[in-house]
Amino acid sequence: MLFNSWEFLVFFPVVVLVYFLIPKKIKYLWLLVTSYYFYMCWNPRYILLIAFSTAATYASGLLLDGINARQRSGAQPEEQAIRRRKLVVAGCFLINLLILAFFKYWAFLLDNFNAVLGRLGFGVIKNRFSFVLPVGISFYTFQALSYTMDVYRGDIAAERNFFKYALFVSFFPQLVAGPIERSGNLLADIHDIPNKKLWDYDRITSGLTLMLYGMFLKLVIADRVSVFVDGVFNGFGACGSGVLWAAAGGFALQIYCDFASYSTIAIGAAKVMGFTLMENFNTPYFARSIKEFWRRWHISLSTWFRDYLYIPLGGSRCSRWRRHFNLMVVFLVSGLWHGAGWHFVAWGCLHGLYQVLGDVLAPARDRIVALLRVNRESRAHKLFQTLLTCAMVTVAWVLFRADTMTDAVGYLRRMFAFVPSAGEAGLFNFGMDGVEWVVLLCAMGTLFAFSLARYRRHETPDAFLAGRRLPVRWAVLYALLFTILIFGKYGPAYEQQAFIYFQF
Image (cartoon, rainbow, N blue to C red; front, side, top):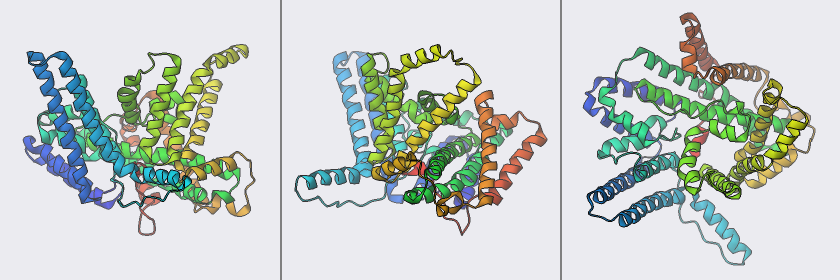
């Protein structure tokens, strides 16, 4: 079930209405049932994977709690308790990551293994497993594993109520594409359900505003620009460098609006019911460095890797070369997390290399800035840093968007070769006419206005509109609504677009 589907427009109001009416003690059970139904709309069999991951991490939490209790009572020596805790965590991670690896990386690993066998003159191994990648498996697996680590570190106590914990893993607004929530936040919200104020006009209108804005990002911008982007990437060999740069920039816009729209709708839907999910995007294309970009892009995953991989590896409190090694490991894993393909690995490694080179070249950059007497706080210098960062990110997005590593290399070579465009490969020859481009540019202006308010005033779209006068607020909301209804990409003549991050 997609957020941008008619089914969800029926499903969500029914869920909220029943949630508001039923007794407080069973509200979490209703949300659990509806969350499982929401996921089963894709493939009912794969609900077993969520159930198994839930059971495994739930059991690991209880085991860790039991070990800690025996240690505190003196029934178990500290050294033995430490070994057992590590064994429980290692076992839990191994089980969950093996499941993730099998469903997500089996075909990729087998293809590469067969390629090696072929070069050595041996026969290939047939792939006897054929299945569709379970939607959102990377998201709920990481969320469940973070709970195990939080219990291991003593940040939270193990959850005793299995059904409340199951809801934490499967909460439908953020189940399949995040944000990847932390146990200390969402579990606390679930426990606080009986104390929540059901009817709060400001909270509900705020949540619905976020959902409306998220739909605008998806249906008006992301799905519209995807028509142009897909056309160019599917036939890049006939395109000139200018069109290739435009399509790369278009994909940077598409993936942001597509992914941010899902997170925004998820946050809004949860807010309507009284839950607070973490922010996942904070104007990433206003970043002035790659490091800052990753503090603003997919925040829930970036902080997950920081807390559960980068810091355990040693973080930045180590030698310079080790810090660079830690960064490269994190971004290599990040690339693999996003997809089973060498182009995803290259995308992650390129972002890691950006940061390593930025650190290595910092002294030389500082000397040049001092020599040229550049004012780092000037608007021109900040704009230059922002544009340079956007260009670097856009180049990396080509690796992410391409179907194979070969296509990515071919696209980038042609992109930097300054090849002129042929008449049949211009901007208006890939499914978007002049009217479509005008609609897109106007929608981008709206996006820029909201982004500027977020960047300068630190106001999310709902907070920004809440601070405006009532006529202005409703005028903007109605404008968004009618823009979606009139210019949104949907209907029988248009193939419904899944969110890009569903494949991860």
